[in-house]
Image (cartoon, rainbow, N blue to C red; front, side):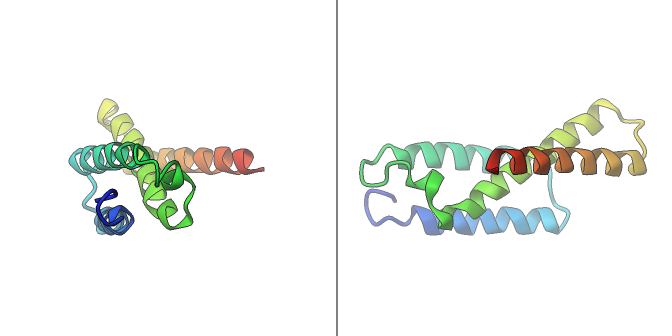
Length: 114
């Protein structure tokens, strides 16, 4: 797609929106994480191989949304892995853990930006 007509950005954004909507609908599972992560990593690495594109997928504002969805899914999977390892964890403790993970990621992001 990248070499033929440059449609990678459109497809990447549509798949990112679809994955984000699925998460907001409460349909997140490890299969969604695995599928989107593979799509994002392989697709982005494949797009970077074209000299015309270069590192644009990592710099372009129009592709930051799918990158945000990618990192969001990574954090959700970390939380779900922790929950699977601790099946006796109550919903309240899991919510507190999730807030700590996302808060830590936000703090790390803010430190990196500054």
